[in-house]
Length: 253
Image (cartoon, rainbow, N blue to C red; front, side, top):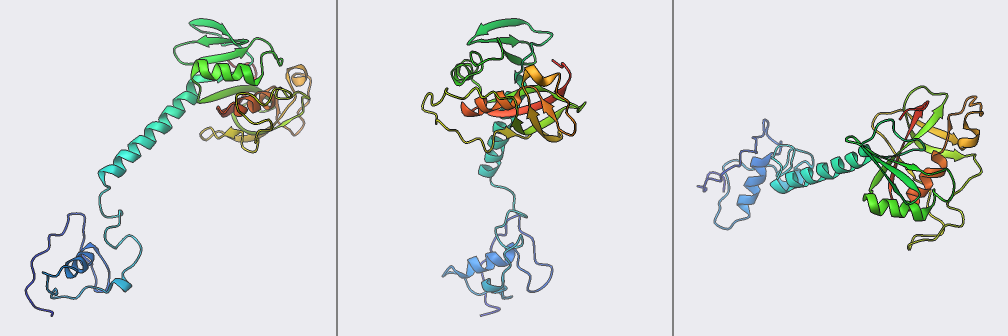
């Protein structure tokens, strides 16, 4: 009964008292915990019934006013570390039709040239043809460079700023996956519903790819014209490399 003696229950530092009667808190939840033990007697002030406790951030042991457990902290660190790894993979490995202006060394492999510098690796095809751009070559590059993600750089117009390409319309007439699938256990007809991934806060655009032959002569009108991404990106996506694509103005390297 109320008023009987009760063994003092230690309240954790994360708990806070209810400012008003009828408001649940860690204290009151601990009272109910105490009542569930046979050796305990009823507290002097009866807590709010369990059926009336809120389901928000005020009940025990909600994380809003209790410190995170160490396991949660470790999980947060692990997730952050994975995201940062993916970011640096994305940041340092590029694919484009043009070689960089500066590099430390160059390596020929799998119908491509790979340019190494302190800041990045840039992969450039020997030529814009099915002999260089095909699933077999891309799988070999993926293995050799241990690729998880890749940043495709593609010339676009008429925009004079860097943009994030989130989709494309292939108007080039080229499809370098045609007659090249299946390969290495991958499907004949891959899902192309989600090829691209967002890049930070860059403006998102849908481009119309016309290929290197027609890029210079094509009048963009109200469209955003790209040179190659609509042909290149599906191949990287097919070999299960995460695709980021940046539209650049002019011959930026």
